[in-house]
Length: 124
Image (cartoon, rainbow, N blue to C red; front, side, top):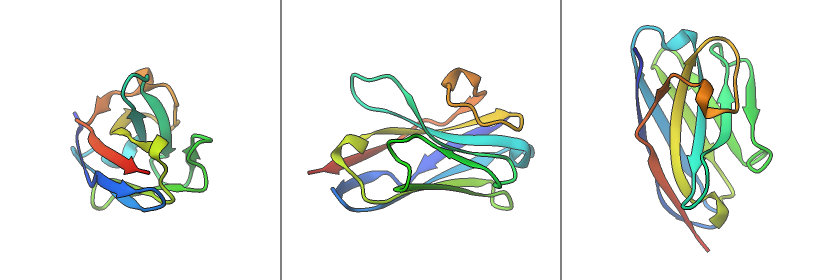
């Protein structure tokens, strides 16, 4: 079992930055692939970024490439998402997700565990 708790969301002006964290419990964190998804009002949940268990491979949605950075610290059982150059269209609830296995998937159905989400609001 892995339990995930996100933090770090908030309100920021366009062009600003936020840092999200996802703390995981469970001894198998280092063998899980971690990703961030987001869901805006009236829209489906979508993939944002993912990172392999070792941290050696990262993947990003085209809409955030070059602006967001995913990283992880297995010693702290934590995955991070740095959000820079934020735009109003980045406004959403951001979810951390974990899956057993070595591959990053962009479909939410491939993930075994989810956090409760943290709200990110970007004002224009």
